[in-house]
Length: 256
Image (cartoon, one colour):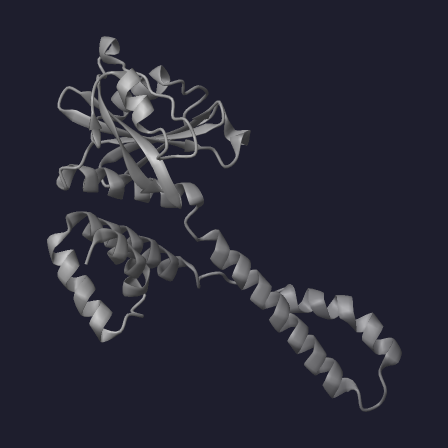
């Protein structure tokens, strides 16, 4: 089983939905693939977060009283001598519906955000590239070699810069799968640290100028947007080093 086939089965695997044959084939693949094991770990972490928090929303005790107060006038005007049961049943159904909506809102508020999911994916891809000895597809410090290499492989032009003079030499680039499709990854080196920078068209450039700082399992992550492109940088280097590279690549604004 290849990695691209295995990734299609990871979510059903985590949810316990695979049949015996697919489960056995995937288990055999996972024993020999550290990258896919890391992705399973990230999915299990997200699932555990939802399971731990999604059902703990409590509706306020005054909710049924407020619904009753709001509904009573309309019911009392049309109520006949035998309508009290149905009035009560209607109130109970309405309260149940509103409670279901409230619980749903509480559950949705505990789900990982899109940025959180992408941060997990960035770390998984970073680990996979290092453990699988596949950090770059094109090995070169020449930005005029790396940038044309992506031509025809992506439907956008990825900006490429060599920053050797600032202490971040470009060592190459590769294609990776991120945020639902193929993306360009620029790979830099700082001392002994490898830094992966995922570059892709921004879905929403309204956050341009703001930089978000995250961390996962000891890896530093920075996300920013510039000129219609989204950048995700990840490394085991310290956050200050990653922030320096992000600034050199055009990150602006307050880090949060």
